[in-house]
Length: 111
Image (tube, rainbow, N blue to C red):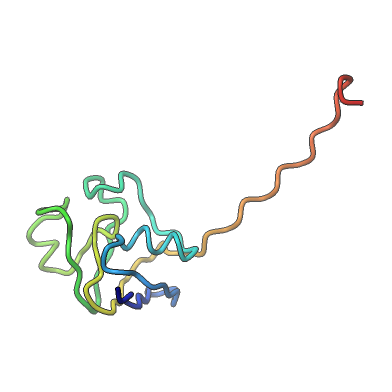
């Protein structure tokens, strides 16, 4: 299975997406955070602009109007790469590692 390169504008972040993995999941696996909420194509939180390339959807009509689709808007949570892609997502950012929890003080039972 061939993975396709994906370039995010304006951040310049890059990741690979295989044809069976939604773009949102592929970005997260590569350590890149894109806005999201429902992950099924209805909330539109992840909506971004496809600048170059070709995508497909597993569902017949995701939560985009006909005009939005014609303008190049896509929903990465349900979009699958079919070619190398360039996408505009103004909120794309590296996933920050979680800060380690502060050490817990020992209580009387553990002393």
